[in-house]
Length: 380
Image (cartoon, rainbow, N blue to C red; front, top):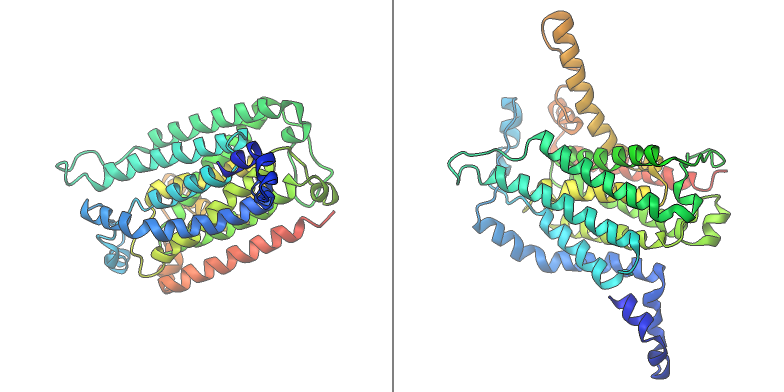
């Protein structure tokens, strides 16, 4: 909104000695303000929303197959969840206030955020109000969630590919460390890769959201790294110097990434141990999908695997655990496990790490991966 107003009334502002307001048209200023605005919006909204969730008795009900884990997580019973409403509201409001709303990528990113947030909210609401409804349906099935996720991803990738038709860089596949390797993708390959990224990271963040502050802290680090990458890709001189693709209008993704950084840091204020609120599927599905879409727009899908290595490892641990269990059950007549428990953060809990140790150490790994990824930007 501020971007469009400043653009429209620029001459009037100049005539009335208010020309300094044109900073709202500079993506570096917009995205920096987005971090601060999103952070303070969360601080302002969270207490009332948490109280409303508590009145609705929308509290967490941790249930595990292991008695040991049920005992460890017993203290979380009744803590309000669906706190992702706070994150989504903050990101959406910040984007509406600061970003260029005429930008195609911004519009698609908002669709991604709200769509996946809606899917997560329906899933949370059904699960958390089952007792109120007499023990009815326990949330959306995995197939239903995947259907909504894949459907959204295909739509976003199709229109993003078509929009970038005149910009060859927008259709290339970039490989970290090998900047000369950048094949141009046909539509089918673009959609396939994009769908895997959006759906994969949407579910990976969802799997990571199991301990106080784990998902929100890691996502704050990852989104800040993509804030930097989006600025680089959006500024022609910098992108050219670093041999990265310059995709016109993609710089606005820095505003979304900045808003997500600020929202995650603000949410962490209430989500750190002991948590006053959990984000639930409402927040985790939306943030994972949004960071995936940002990576697609700036053509850094593989970089997301490095920066978001913690999320990738969490998802991989679940797939390996399930796959190995099924294989050994067929082969030996009984299922065996690779990890003490999956996702990975619960494996370390059962090894004896405290919840705070797991969370802080995962943050440290995530931060190191983000630094490593940003350092590789300079490598030629």
